[in-house]
Image (cartoon, rainbow, N blue to C red; front, side, top):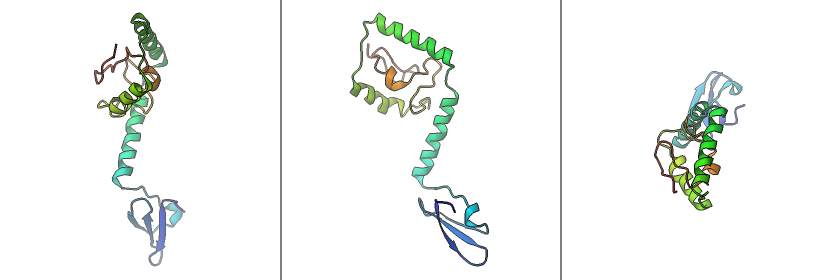
Length: 141
């Protein structure tokens, strides 16, 4: 039996699934173990869309070799400017304000999938010389 539904027999071979999350009703001739319901609430739809976008971003990540090169470039720039660092609060402000709401949908939930980046953002943003390759936020140094 599906754990998303409360089932009722509505006569003969007809079953009714009432989705526990959103109240969606599905009438079906199939037995409860064959009925699959997906919540249609706006929150559930938004979560599914976010998961889809994150999967697309992960699929478009730069190769490991490209990420190593990008990290080397970022480290050289960081060291060349005296190794300025951001605070924990600054990193999380940028993550919330820019990365998690990336208008180009490149944020995977942890990494930036831009070809000039590929960074784990929570670590990369500690470098104050790190800005968004698409220009959504500037470097601080």
